[in-house]
Amino acid sequence: MARFSMHYNYRFGGSNRYYGSGMPHGQYDSGLSAFVTDHLNKSRQQLILDMSNMRRKGEAIVRANSRVDTGRMKSMVTGTGDFGTDILKISFGWETLHPYYAPFQEFGTRTGIKPMMAVLTGYNTVLADLRSRLGGA
Image 1 (cartoon, helix red, strand yellow):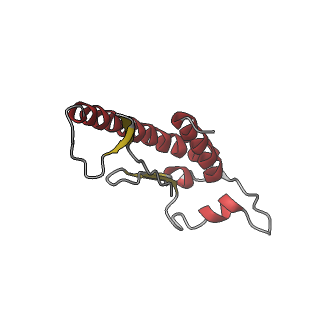
Image 2 (image 1 turned 135 degrees about the horizontal axis):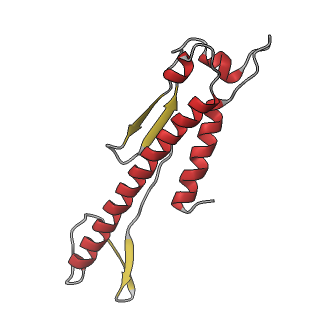
């Protein structure tokens, strides 16, 4: 889980000004408050769009790297996105033990099944893409 914490402050008149309660205090605060709120809303919308696209990309990577015998593993790849709170979350892969043999294919066994690491590959790719979108390393 990733957590982003944002603190808003700016310098005006030689001192820091904070929006602790979200209420504007001076003649310039109303315009600045509207600008900051608009910018944060646009940034959140773009981040939600990017995360939704990355979830679909992760699902596609898992499907592409899955082993095919009957096609059941490919057809059961799923993903979710939760964007209703301050913490934005996405997930993709298989539901727990659905299909039952997915973990054995993903991680391998000591007795002959080689690990395919489809979800790990998707996770690493999606994480790198999201970090580059956010300007991180």
